[in-house]
Each structure stands twice: as C-alpha cells, then as structure tokens.
Image 1 (tube, helix red, strand yellow):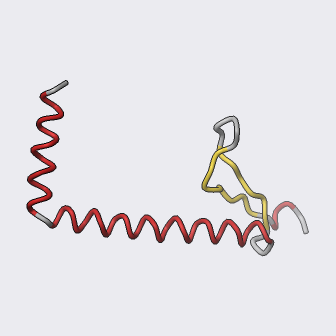
Image 2 (cartoon, helix red, strand yellow):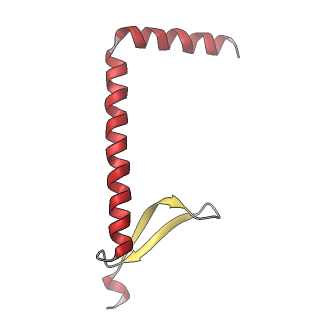
Length: 77
C-alpha cells in the first residue's frame, strides 16, 4: 500500500498541545471503526440536542422567559 492509498481523517479531539489529531488510515482498521463509532455518537447527541432546542424555541413561555432572563443578565453587567 502506498501513501496515496491512505486518507487523513480529522479526529474529534485535540492533542495534548491543543493541535488537531489526525488518523492516517485506509478506512478499514480498528482505529477507523472506533472513530466511526465516536462520530456516530457525537452526531446522535447533536441531533438530540438540536431537537430539544427546537422544542424550547417553539414553546412561547420558555422563549419569553429566556428573553427576560437575558435582559436581566445584560442589565446587571
């Protein structure tokens, strides 16, 4: 296998120095599968969170309470 047969994959974390982590892979190994699982979990959690946010924004009582809270927070600065 040559280097051209491999892909660089950005992992969902940073290294100890704060720089992005990359996985050099052909897409079939153990670490690729672990990265797939982590990405799937993060996407599912994000989708659920967006659903909750949409529900909150659709609830007029919550939206009005949030606006009032934001106004009070801004006034106290």
